[in-house]
Amino acid sequence: MKRMSVSIKRFDLSGFVETIKQAFTAPSSGLESFREISPYDEIVYGFSYSEFPRYWSKEEEPDIVKTIMEGMLLVFLPFEVSCFEDEILFCIDGTTIDIPQSGSKDPYGESLLDIIKDDSNVTGFCVLREEGHILIDSCMHHKASVNNLVPFLKPLEFCGFLEEPMQSFLNRFILKP
Image (cartoon, rainbow, N blue to C red; front, side):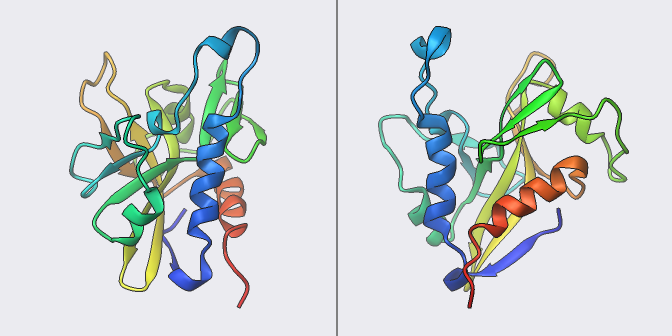
């Protein structure tokens, strides 16, 4: 997905952030109920793509919208909630997507399928404010793992089968003039 630029006045940033946070704070049931997931386990920030992403402390309950509006930080918000057996992707908006078993290669590097099937990666959006606009990139957050101990954020130029669902999700928050 190419970088999206939307006037601050035309983007419901609060609704966007709250929708994503709510996906991680919904009550769980069954065997997973003992493990509550905090949105701050997945939402990270940095000063730029070249810096290590940082986690907010769970105790501080940061105002993510205010952080973005102050224009000092790049904030990663996930689109993907989880992947089940490399076959189904659960998305932030409650939809599920069947993961294709083969796909086209990203002309800039690794395959989106490789990114998604690696449990240390999460696909989503990097959001920042620049002047009077909200800038949104499709992005990958690589968490530290055994194979690569260094976490990072990487913009994705090519989102393959996720391109349309990610764009549709974003369109829900663009306000009509």
